[in-house]
Length: 232
Image (tube, rainbow, N blue to C red; front, side, top):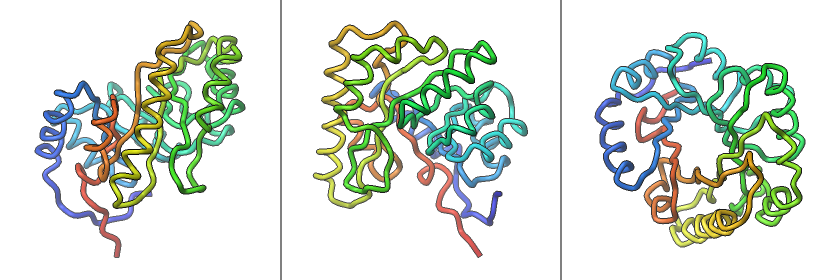
């Protein structure tokens, strides 16, 4: 599950630099630890960081079981409905809610264990068709029609989006601007009691500086902390 070796990085120093940069913007750092072994996560943890993001449910569960229980685990990758039950008891935030059926399953699993599960709605803003998420119009519709309000074991904390993987900063900026405009619109509306548009999770290692200009409250950074993985 954790192939290696990896490049040596000054994890503590990397985290401290990012936190200093982000705190001035009121932004939370989610350290993306996917594919990295528990030992490196523990190194980051002992430096004082406790918020980590994983892409895959199996890897997330394995690390949750192996590492300190005060870590805040975020599931940031695509989530299949049949795997919600494995993370429902402990996950801090599910970033990638990309369908009403998935949201209904999260509510169902939350009801079974009497736990309200915090989530973000994923918005599709990128040019790549391979990325998941609601269209902006769909987000407005599902919130305005009141369906989410009937899911008491779900708490929508905001939106998540991924920009196109490109070196053209104008494209990235335009995409981040579109989701910023969407959340601004929603913040002005009367929302269901279990919906608050507080968090905007945009920005990764390659584009988080642009995301900060468009209201990001949460960035998902892995490479700039742990380095690139070196495969044999």
